[in-house]
Length: 365
Image (tube, rainbow, N blue to C red; front, side):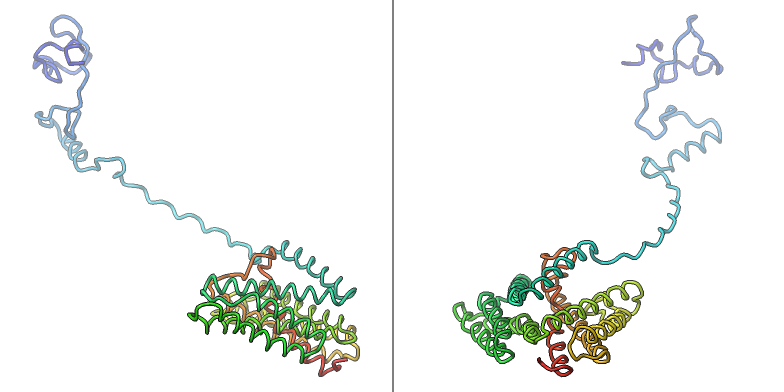
């Protein structure tokens, strides 16, 4: 609509005729004898939309208002914001464990039941459990090496040779284990020859390392089983290792403040190591006194101390491997634990230590 539709006389500006502007302020009146309605104001394209651009401000307050409107922000986003109040500090979080304890305990109890049944009913079944753990551990290790480093350690000769090592150690003793280890290394060298020579040295080196690290060390568990009280020796080995890990975890989680090896495993603390030593020594004294034929409590103290040291070093060793590979766990097969290798890390280097000390203390019987 235009201005005339609102009843403004022809020739009147935005604010009416000169006579209308000269009239005193008050209720609208009819200059020509009839009451008129104030016309709709059309906002011009100038900052001051309330008056004619040509009209000079009439008062000081009006001039100050013009200055404020011109110099002030033109957009809503430019309006000055009140400073936000600082939020109150959040309450300190309760210290939590770093893994799912329910899943970890459930898996641990299940594995313990399988090991206990096979260990004290049919020893051959327990040997089968060791072989399965070795093969799965080799698969996890070789898979991570290929994924993260491009190293192709041949799995088939490692798996076959690893199973042979465990069986040979149980059937023929340490000599059988050494022979199987040598043949496995030779098989790795020959098997890798079927592929191009690029990367041959690193592949076979990783293969020989995997053969020694997983199946050969696991063979000492089978050697423990060959004694007359072999089942109790294996149980002592497992209990001491688990108690050492549990003591380190519990004490370190609750009281740990000083890092043990922050560049290798930031979660491990010196307080946790002391907890591992204390728990393992007490458990060692009890096991040697009540489980091992001819054992003495003071031997258990030494055995527990050695187990705490070897288990911690084994854990740090695998942490070093995982840090080099850039991974947190070797696998996801065991909820709350990671992979099989994440459970074997402290068991593998501890097995030869326990076997040797028990031979020295009570014989190979």
